[in-house]
Every structure is written in structure tokens, then in C-alpha cells.
Length: 238
Image 1 (tube, rainbow, N blue to C red):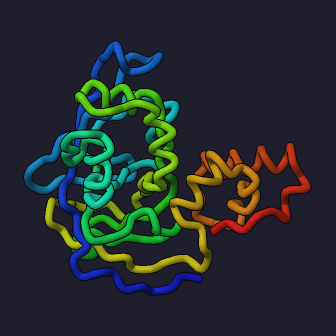
Image 2: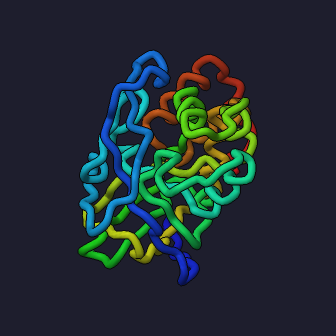
């Protein structure tokens, strides 16, 4: 069952960010990355495959329908500026949409966002969560920021940001309003999903109760349940 929900009237897209894949020695085993995304001016197309003009370097671990768009909040970037010891511009965390006025980490898996106006702007659905990697840490170090124990710091903060699938393609621009048009009838938030996939694996089987769960998380949950069948009556998913 879906429930309509109000969104703060100030919620909007602050910036739309894209970037090309490029070769870098610091970019893990692949030596290739597209984490460096920069704001664009004017309207940009958003399709089920992603944001127009954006590239994905690691197609094994990133991209696909469940990770077509990555969103991160300006409020969370502000939080990190103090910890990282320097400015964090829109797109620096590799996000396609820098938002403002909405708690993206409290979003529920299956929650739907209308960006801009129906019929023109895209309809997005929360599907997955960002898991930090060493390339992320190396990138911050390249930018002169404090990347010490970054993966752990990022995980502990509970500010991972959601990946979204594109239910209806459309055009998005900086300044477009963002409205939560409905929320699913469960309590699995982006933070809860992140914990289940990382530090609280006993929660994994309960993820299978969520119809809109992304394929990566569903496969992890199914594998865990096969190995630990007694966990079927495990911890709640919130």
C-alpha cells in the first residue's frame, strides 16, 4: 500500500551534476573513475539508464536501473565540510542531484519523488544505497581533504544518500521543486538499508519483505538467508 505524504515546500534540486569517466592512478584496481561530477547549467535529460552527459566507469559495482541517479543533500555536504577540513562543492561526492530541504537518508525504499512538474520532470523511486569504497576516500585525498579512515567515518555517520531508479523519464534543472508523492507501507529507510548491508547483517532477511528493494540488496539478502535459515525471524527492518 502507498501513502501520500507532504514534502517541505522548500525541497528542491540545488544542482544537477555529471562527469566523464577518466583514467586515474588512484582509482582502485580499475584505475578509472567518474566520481568527479560538476554542476551543469540548463535542463538535463534523465532516463532509466541515468543522467544525460554522465558516465560510469565501474559498470560491475555501479550503474544499472537501480542506481540510475544518486542523490545527496546539501545539508549532509555541509556536515562533512567541518570533518573533512575544507569546502565540499555540489557533485564532489559523486552525486547527480544535490538536494536541499529534504532528509534523503530518511527516505524509504520504494518512496517516489516527483522532480519538477509531472509530465515534464522525472518520477524517481528510491531503490538502493551508496556503499563507500576506497576510490571515494582516495578522491577526497586528491582534493586535499582529510580522508583518514574515510570509509568507516562515512559509514558511522549514517548519511549515505540514496540511489534512485527512473520510473518516468524527464528533464531536470537546478532549482526544480522536489516532492515526495507517496511512501510505501513499511519502515525500511535508506539508513536502515545501509546498516543491513554493512554492519548489521542479521537484518538482511527482513529486506525481502520490501517489494521495491534493488537487485543487489535482494541478492545479498537471499544469499544470507540460504546460509542462515534461522534468521528468517530476525531483527526488524527499520
